[in-house]
Image (cartoon, rainbow, N blue to C red; front, side, top):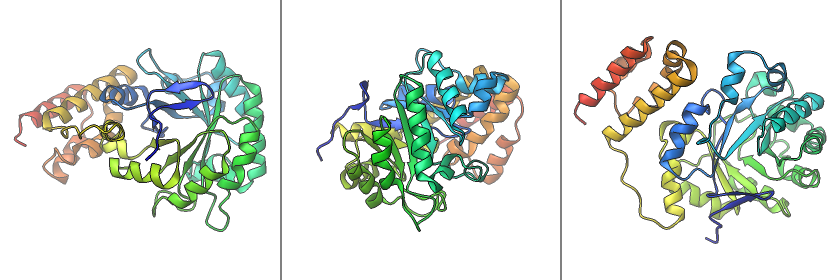
Length: 330
């Protein structure tokens, strides 16, 4: 496999060709700063950002979505929407704050987003999607990238047809998820269609996305599609060590030992404390409960034990519960 172990997007150099995806409700600063020290992350993204919320500049939620720090680099900011002027204004605002890369989401399948013409909804009018991308590119000096799905449904797979127009518009890179909007997250990512997108590009990197849950799946993505990099999403929610393991494999290094119970619990505790710092003790504890099913399947005694943790509302009670997990035998 002839693969570059670095990624270049419009002159921005990234140390690995592995990207942590923007995932609504999960890709906040607390998660990114928990993931990065494990190794292998070339670029991470914020959650999807609403242009309207950015421009209003109000509310604690908006500040949290934008929160970052010196250790949280390199970082891309993803915006979504269907209105050109609003997207351009949001991009300009982000550029003024010093961001280095802006991504436009044209792939989110959520009904409340795609149904309103944003996210994957833009795939129903590819020409308009390209026009929107061109306007955003022209509105800022930082690189603008786009994340696509294959199409709205299998009746018309439009992603490969859009690539020349997006490239001519000045888009610096394209991430392609190998499913249609109608599939959601069901079925399998279509690597052959991702390859068609790769083959349609002349000069910009194409980033493959979908079903990368192991080093073997990552190699298959690279080898089958010829993509320049891989974006990894849901797999790192329950296995934060996945990007590390893929990166070692790409370098030809032997596999690292899988994290033992103590290492998993240490990661859980550190992530929890970062959540408290970001959101405050009360909100942070409540929000952390969504991570219990992700992390706890291998550590908990069963469904009843998980339900008990999902009912915790106090930070100290959550700490005690994690301490108790540490005292149990593997």
